[in-house]
Length: 431
Ligand code: SAM
Ligand code: SF4
Image 1 (tube, helix red, strand yellow):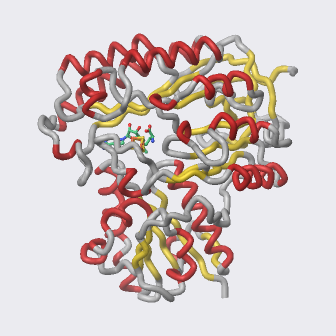
Image 2 (cartoon, helix red, strand yellow):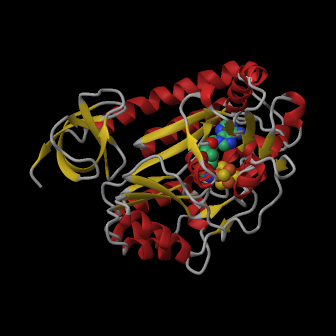
Image 3 (cartoon, helix red, strand yellow):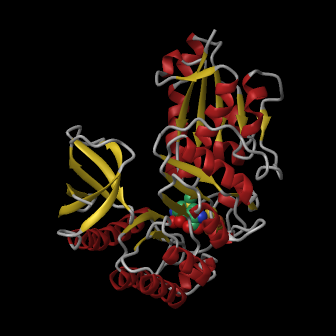
């Protein structure tokens, strides 16, 4: 009989892709995926612990399914991902209806865990993670994520990732190349290379070398990558982005703060000047590149002057978009134990000031594209308007176009007729 699994995914792209790996492993064991929680034989929570809010959301969902387990004691409930890694067995104390837990480095053990054939806790370090490739059941058919490295060595003072995902390990370039070739064969057109700090990819070749190698794969039209660490962004990488035809003109380069004091306390390893030099170099060598960033507001000890420096930086740099977050103390990190924690209402106030400044910049940048011609990769029906098709520019901006006879996965040229804050509107034009 076919068994079914429901996966609840929280957090970043890395987690979304980990869920695809879990499905890949389970599919081999005869499981199929269900969207109906009530029908599932196995329920997996793939969790995120980057901020407290994500943790709270998970615990409330976990509490909500307690009655299902009472009604159907045979269903198995698993907690995966970063909270599983960080909390370990404590999860059973807090939620006795959980059957087993496994961390991001132990997805390969899911077969035994799901069958109840092993101890119900798998959170140990896995040094082989980069050489042991798992089957993947992908959600999309045009764009695919490809992990190039695992873990992180940076220990930014606020961040829990190095504790949950372990030390940095790069996948051999041949394994990545084979995966990308296979994807091209299956009709995928765009790949996004994933790692916490892709610039420090280091196996038989370095990251620019890997981009050169993947640029040769026929059938793949676009190559993207996340995330780049500003400290490790090399001239070699800028050169690769500028010279390789398939590597898209977009970089996500988290700045975190515009204040040198705060950057030092965050242990980021660069100053604001270092950062803006890299931005200038990127804009000079890759004309039209879009640059997005992450900002943390209300870091311990952040003064009003520090905050104003971040606002000033946003106005000076003019990012195409940002993700901004209120600082969230994560147990076990250095920043959690620092002096000068800010009240939540102060963090909220600063966050809205930051977003207000950036919203205007984003809208202005999108409006400046009106009248230009952009290439988009058609991804399918728009999620917000079923009458439209949607795709992205090479610079990663969403464009909605009227629904016409265009196949998914095609690259087409569009004229931008309107620039809004979150997306662009376009109409197809001749190539
Ligand atoms: N490795 C990437 C980097 O260094 O840029 C991103 C890692 S993290 C998944 C994504 C973003 O979450 C970070 O860039 C940071 O802005 C934010 N973040 C991480 N820890 C945080 C914390 N404790 N509180 C608030 N935001 C946090
Ligand atoms: Fe976290 Fe810093 Fe590593 Fe990014 S680079 S995952 S922010 S420790």
